[in-house]
Length: 400
Image (tube, rainbow, N blue to C red):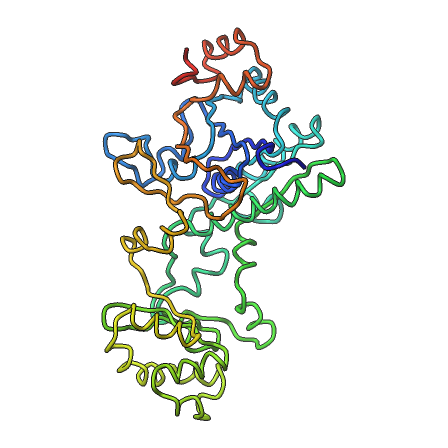
């Protein structure tokens, strides 16, 4: 396989999981082209919208489609599918979020004549099994993966975590699956269908919850802001000006924490000898910690504990995250100038030599239709004919 800049990806998805997978590949340096209907992807209207006067200007779309080129193409017709075929002939990877039956039929059709092509199908439940094809949402994804049940106050109803986290986890798994299939293709010369179900990717991230059941017969329950897996302290604790997260599950970390909080006698107390015992008396421990913590600020507590080799972090609000010195030092933020002065957007989530050095905004509808089809070998007359018949949409420089 050549370098990332030689990798060509077609993004046919209209859901967060597929769009995020292709965004990750784009920020790693791949050439990613978004293929959307001539009236626009459904993601263009996904809330939150940037302004009330721009109903097709979605913050989610602007984020998920950054660093991509854009083609508006109705490939439901024979002429449209032929045009899509031209692009598939040039592609290494195609990403979809179709329903299971549609994805399987699409896969049979496109890969029969293109053995090296890799098709990444990102769905909620995968392409097989009794739940394949079921409808889903951000909330049902959270529920089906087991995370709704363990999130929230133990005396109240389960809670969904903020945002479509499950879809982003599915997107990460889809990007990894694409790269794994590309690696396999180096040996075999053949592509494959990468079947990613968000339910199983979420289930795979449970860490100790599954081991608690398989080895102890215990079901993990909601425990508010505590770890709930027989470890303490691994939780949020209040300080003078807010909250900090302290994680000291190992014995060495526990001893360091006790010393740091001027409570060395707790390190030798047999009631706190193991992480499990400490979890059983978490309220008592938190009460003994409270005087030290409440008399200090987040910054003071975190810097003090870090100096004592105890994992700790302030709980930052979003406005604090946006100006945090660590993210600034890592040059993490992107600045989409067309969205307004001072606007920030999450940028490239890793440091790679192949990653693009300049921010590229999400494409306007059909922004690159003509140029992308031209690269695929289509004559200008063909492109104009498709545009005239409504099979493709053109905008911007491609209209000239």
